[in-house]
Image: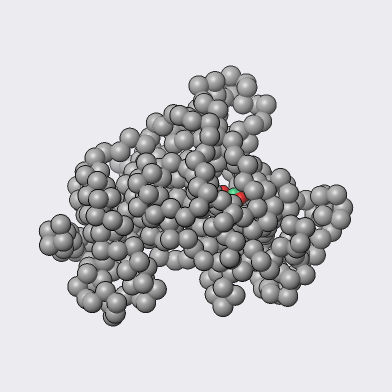
Length: 412
Ligand SMILES: O=C(O)CCC(=O)C(=O)O
Ligand SMILES: [Fe+2]
């Protein structure tokens, strides 16, 4: 990141961002034909939380694009079988609906490919329903396959784990926003998809009279005013066709529904960083409030009511306030270690992290620390955070806050 972008973006750090009621300002998605500077992507898409599409130039040297696709653009099932054979993979059944998603099972990759072959031969139907391979952490399990390379634009990735997933499907993904309100990028290895995208806030108009999100935003039932009282107020979604090789950037909190128009293989990745950390923190506070409303009636009869709210929140969203604090601690400690040591061999942090921080540059590290500091300050003044039992945290938040403040003071 360059100095100018850093200084412009740091003035945003203190500014409360209004992402919660965006309107459909344009019916077109910005198209990125060839390489642009990282700062440009940061300034024009990450910070303003705007979607864009990268051309197939950005994936043309990926191994999976060369090996997993036949000359006529179809999935190369033979080749995939050779590579993954008996590996267990998660498969969802999109003919069955459990709440707002589809039930999943684990099966050998081979068995899924056999199903898929039959499904294709049978004119895209099967007595077993419509199965699709989803959320498979392929890159994590087979790093030696060197399947693809994450573009630099998506490399400031604070979700410590690799959440690379690969999907093989030809159906519809129900209407949703991604986990923790993260960003996502999704590359089509082969096939085509249609995306319907709604800016953050529009989902409020797409709820039924009980407050549940629509499963399919194109279903005729949404016209029923009794069931979907606010549907008329929703804007038209951004409708995008994604071709083979293209990568879509889906910003934080943009709800989406996806159709596979052909037999498709795609690589999806969710990520978080200093640009959308405030959105995640806002989301976690809203999740906790909704749990609190849900069990309000027991508030006065239970001593550990607040602790229980945290437990329920963790089981619903996968994270509670204590873990969010640990997440921020890891991110800030890594950056402070990086700045304190010679960048090329920062011994306290993993090599690939040091490499990635080095590539993004010291201005980016400074930006990251400022953002963590800002959210940490907000968290420490949150009443529910103050109520956490000391045992919920593995460190003293005030001490860490001082350390980060000191680090930021020395670099700005
Ligand atoms: O490609 C798809 O089916 C969409 C996947 C998606 O939106 C997700 O996994 O969050
Ligand atoms: Fe998604």
